[in-house]
Length: 341
Image 1 (spheres, rainbow, N blue to C red):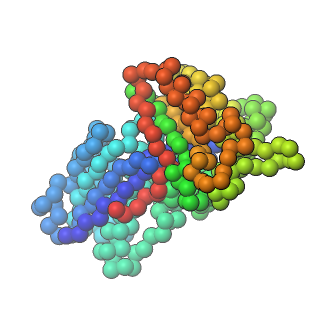
Image 2: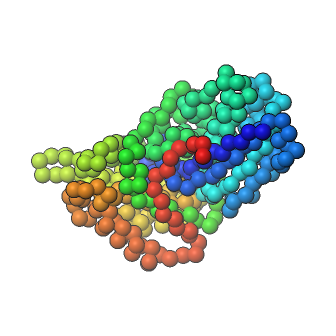
Image 3: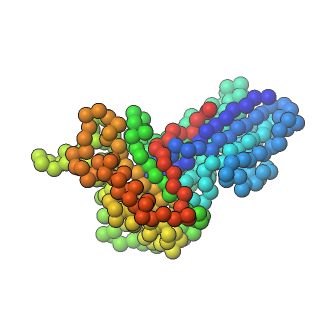
């Protein structure tokens, strides 16, 4: 009998205006352990689930189990015995990519089992796993950071068009991320159904400009000394200033107010305090984040208002003035993609 354990991150999609196109991985994870081989089911239950979000099926209808079983069947190995054990730390129906985590971890595990039982003849690349996960999940802005980690731009959400990695991993921990998890779930289908069939052209133009600014801000973070954009002889834009304006949405959040009114109100208050913030995915979680230039010797903010210290102080003041038992607040940074532990 053989065993492998997969660690898979929570993800936050959209980041404001990047609807269905931009997402990042967070540094907290679900874990999946798979055992396979003759006699596996004599020693293990087929499905075991633990963790704070274990309210999922514990039989063969479990999504993770069903995906692995399906892949074994399609590859011609239906006889392989296997069992799974899941530790579910990612909240469900909160806009943190729990479905993507389940799908991606299942496919990663299936690829390892298939490689073993086929004596190395079946080998899946991460791009191939991304294609398969996208076909199941449908949302590349969650799937891409879940598999590859970091901040990802999905150019086309269809198989064969792989995401673009927007930043290097030299300083994942230089991002300060705060996610506010609301105690009420949001169904992705409800959030989708709340969207209009058409949007105003001027809103679309403004949203496109904000996406461009957000992508530019992330793309600048390739080297530690490139956190300020020189726009002219006497004018610069700090990364955090760009993150703030680049996370302003015009095409989906306001339309969904009836789905997550408390979340949207909190986002507006955070942004009113000049803190980069947005709804995470379909909600109801909120994500706020900023770049900490203090992690690098010799860097300064060029504008005291947009330094990490100044934003952090405004954030702390917001939290003090907006305490509520309905919100669980976590601190984190950018996470790594799906990997073998």
